Structure formats: C-alpha cells, structure tokens
Length: 182
Image 1: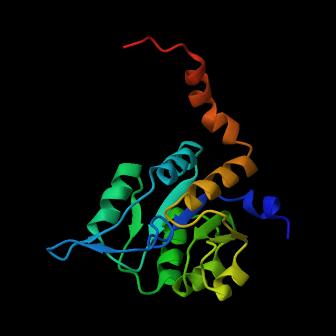
Image 2: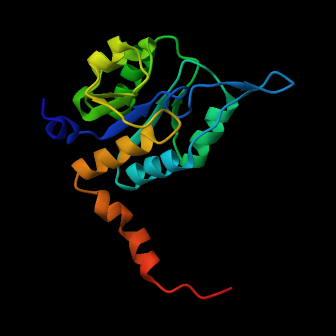
C-alpha cells in the first residue's frame, strides 16, 4: 500500500480522546471530577492542520468537560462525546460536512474505534493499541498517545499534502529575526 497516495485526499481528521489526545490515564479529584492531560505540541499540530484548511473533529466514548474546553481552545466545533457507536457518529459527521469517507482520517486506539477504521479513508493508531486494531490501521505512530502521536500524524499529513514547509515557514522566518534584549 502506498501511504502517500492514500493520505493525499484527506480533508477531514477525527480524533478519539483517551489514549490518543491523552495518555489514556484518568485522574480523579477529591470531588470525583475526571482530569486529563493534553499535549500542547499535539495541539499545535492540530492547529497547523486547521490553518492548512483541514477540518477537525473529536469522537469519544466518554464525556468530560475537559474535552469540551480543549476543543474550544483549539477551535474545534465538531465534538461528539458520550458516543457508544462511533460509526454512527462518524457517518453523521460525513453527512454534516459532505465529505466522502475516502477523504477522511480517524485516529483511535482501541477496539471501539474499529468500525470507524473500516469506514474512513485512512486509519491511524498507536504503538500500544490492540493487535486487531493495528492490523486494520494504515499507519501506526512511533510516538505514544498524549505524547506526540497526534503531532506526528499531523506533520505526516501536512508533508503528504506538500504543506508542512508552508505551515511552519512563519515560525522559521520569525526565528531568523533578531530578538531585542529585555
């Protein structure tokens, strides 16, 4: 399979949360609130995708206010939480955006994500995912969930679209400017 040919048409990327945007661990406060840690570099990768015109969405089985807040921080308006059947939510996302399945990617890490893997155009998982999910993935990241896996895929997608250099140019050009001492 030529990954570059399969990834090139991608116009929309949907992400699972626990184990993908986070390391999969849940922390509970004294009041019983679940807390999650998100990687800021993953967030930058997602922002670079949006700046390149790629739509983003979140589809997750759990429901957490931290997910809503993180999505708001990143400007992601399509957020599906508390979803038992991710395939149905994914199909609703396709209908809402009028984007074909082969123009979508999904990044997930567990068996509940398998129905979406079979439907999307490009499936991405993580090194610690179950073997069955890995067999259905088009790409397995080197980095772990919540630890750069999302950024790795975002940069791979931008590179495939020939947009990585353009999306990072503004940072490189700013870095070449002398910085006045403070």
